[in-house]
Image (cartoon, rainbow, N blue to C red; front, side, top):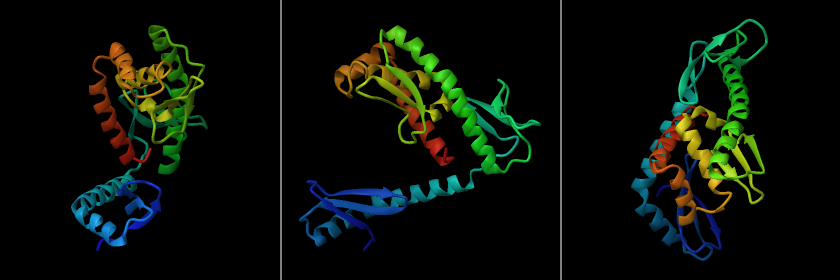
Length: 223
């Protein structure tokens, strides 16, 4: 029998989750153990596939490393990382520059600093441009460290974007911005919400697919 951790709660159904290589089962309070065991056994092939994918992605993350001469994504294009005398880090439209003799981890952290700077410079500006087109008025636009969400919109009309979005190409950046601006009118994912998105971006479904591919690529590099 495959090992798993069990979490019982007031939920109505049994469900499976794979988290960090661990199989977690969530079940109703009174579900018999033998029923849960049978459910897990019936999903053994699916679990094995998911664990293999998780293991492969973990290996990719562990092997990913940046060095001088490596390249990173900014708005969908690759730019090299170059050493520059001094203590400054930045972007000059040709490369990501930073002090020499940094370790791979320090190089990655320097890139994150630059990404944050670029996100704060570019994303609010583009949000204002698209908001004018959509006759929308966000209360504020902030850049965050969110890992699982490209963007969010609160009931107070405050929009947030993960700095990681700046790595996407402009078409995908526009999709996320328009998505969050549409939430200013519909704070849900109802049919009305998607009609707003489609009125601005008829090809939004295709952009969603490309965004998922980018998300998987960045996850493999542990950004």
